[in-house]
Structures are given as C-alpha cells and as structure tokens.
Image (cartoon, rainbow, N blue to C red):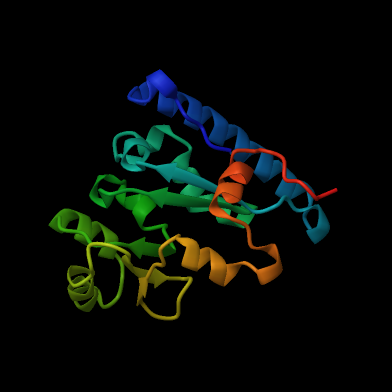
Length: 192
C-alpha cells in the first residue's frame, strides 16, 4: 500500500499524523498476532516491510520519540516487521534509530555529517569512507551490514528492454506497451 497526500504533500503534520496512526495500528496488530501464534509457525503473520521515504522528517531526533518508528526500528524485527528507511540526509535521523539499522545500502554522499551518520558503529569506517568517496554518481552503491558477509560495492542494472529480456522466460515475454497496460491494471487476455 502506498500513501500519497495530494495537496497536503508538503504538510509534515498530515504525514506524521497519518503515518503514526497507521504504524501504531500495525505495531499493535503484529505484536498480538505473533504473541498469539507462539509455538505455531503456521499462525505467524506474513513478514511486513514498512518503507519510510524522506525518513529524516519522521525520525528527526526531536520527533522520533513522539512517533512509533523508533520502537519499530528497535523491537519489531522479532514480530516479523522490518523498517526500510530511505533518505538523502541520514545525518537528520535520530542516532538511536540509526544504530538499529542492520543493513545499509548507501550511494555517493558528499556531506561529511551524512557520511559520519552512515558509518556510525561500523568497523573499518575509515576504509569504507574512501570507498564511499569513490562511488560513481549513478548506479553504484555500497552495501554493508547483516545482509552481506563483508561490505561490497554493487552496480545496479538499468530497467530497459535488455533487462526485461534477461529476467523473463522466452515464452512469457511481452512488449513494453503490454507491460505498461498490466501495471495500470488493465486486464490481461488469456489468463483464467
């Protein structure tokens, strides 16, 4: 589910009110479901990822303690909920929340405060600082943390015809126009 605030898109109060309300409900629901299912893996709720774009708005040190996001970052992994934080200014995020981030995917950063925030608590930070400084401005990122055995630089792929041809089986390949129609929710012919 994606929330878009339309003409209230620049209203921080609207964002915080709605996002905080929804995530508090999710928090309560997942805690209850997991506690009810203790000992029965089949009853556990599906894993959930909550994505926060422009995270510094919600996780600013002065605001983070008034929202549920800090609690989710600290406690909800054991309840099958993961917080995905997306931000261009990680230095604006509460240090306690930043310390709970297990895996970090970082593109080129040029602000010293942001670099320090991303590398906070990471062993070998001085060597990684040099790696961060050498990343290309497009399509390169440094991944570090729980998801990888050691920090690694990755080159992302372009989402073009060549990409789709490589990931889709030959008998299921469709044109760009057909893919766009499917994404818009138009009916696909031939499927029962």
